[in-house]
Length: 191
Image 1 (spheres, rainbow, N blue to C red):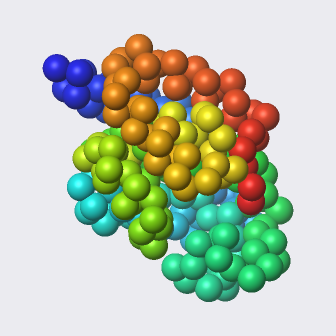
Image 2: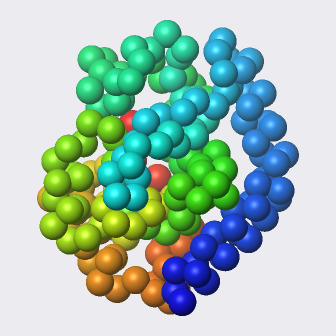
């Protein structure tokens, strides 16, 4: 019953978010396109529920000539590729907003473990031990509100395991409220 209600709420909130935030989407789209050539939204390969690959949507924060399929943390001198608008988007997490489309499509949920990058085999392996790979990935999650990029992989996986054990609408609501509180302060954001 929890999963059915959660999916219903995911659809309602993602649809409402896309409608209400459409002026913001347009403004960000224009800012990205004015500053740098290339598409405003890009798709990034991630690992979803039960190891299935899918593409999350994000506002582009890097120049179009950035090496393809290389995560930011693996780029040599990544800062040279990040645009001014991109820094703002990353700091405020607004680059993640297009994932509302992924939620609407059923590939993601509002709350769940963040989708691992296609090459984060260590995180996927550790999540396998606690059942977190069997969940839809989330726009936000328990690990996100407890450290985000600053967390070592083993701690992220442990927190994802805690989420599996505590899953409920009340716990999801707590995570959403913590996300709203922590996002403006850019807590745990590295790039």
